[in-house]
Image (tube, rainbow, N blue to C red; front, top):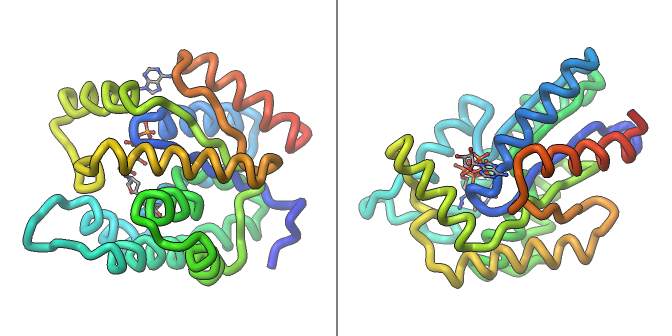
Length: 216
Ligand code: Z5A
C-alpha cells in the first residue's frame, strides 16, 4: 500500500447540487497550471464497468426497483473497480487524484440515508478501497432548500433527473447530518465547507486548505 503522507488524493462530497463538480474543475485547472499531473474521477463511474453501474444506479424505473442492499453493493462494485483500474495506477505515478464522491458518500447515503450500520459500511469500504482513503475530503455543505433550488435550475437546463433525487426531504437531512458527524469524527481529513457562498469564495477556501495541507 502507498505511504499515507505521499497520497495526493482529494475527495469532494456533499449533497447533490452543492457544487462538487464546479469546484473540482477549479482545483484541477489550478493544479494543471502548476504543471501537476491530475486524474479526475467520479463515483460511481470513471471505468467502463463503473459507467454501466452508474447508468443503472441513476435510472428511475419501477421495473428495476433496486433494493437498498443491491444499491449498496453496486456502489461498492464501482468503487472497487475504479480503485484498482484508475486510482492505484495514478497514485503510483504520483499523480493527484480528485474524486467527485468516494467512500464517505456510502457512509452518508447508505449509512445516514438508508440506515446501514457505519461499522459494517467501513468494513465493506475497506475491501472496495483496498484500504485507501483520501488524504483530504471536502464536504460542501448546503441547506436542503438551497440544494433543491440548484438541482431544479439544472434540471430546467438539462432536462435530466435521477432515482436518488426522488428521495424524501428527511432522507437528505439524514445524509447532511451524517456528513456533519464525519467531519466531527475526523476533523483533520474531513473539512466542512460552507457551499452557500459564491463559486469564487468557495474555491478560495479550498485552495487555501489544499496549499496548506500539501505544502504548495
Ligand atoms: N451515491 C450514493 O448513494 N452512495 C455512494 O457511495 C455514491 C453515490 C458514490 C450520484 O449522483 C448519486 O449517487 C448521488 C449520491 C449517490 N445522489 N444524490 N442525491 P451524481 O454523481 O449524478 O450527482 P452528485 O454527485 O450528487 O452531484 P451533482 O448533482 O453533479 O452536483 P454537484 O457536482 O455537487 O454540483 P455542480 O454540478 O457543480 O453544481 C450544480 C449547479 O449549481 C450548477 O448549475 C452550478 O452551476 C451551480 N453552482 C455550483 N456552485 C455554485 C455556487 N457556489 N453558487 C451558485 N450556484 C452554484
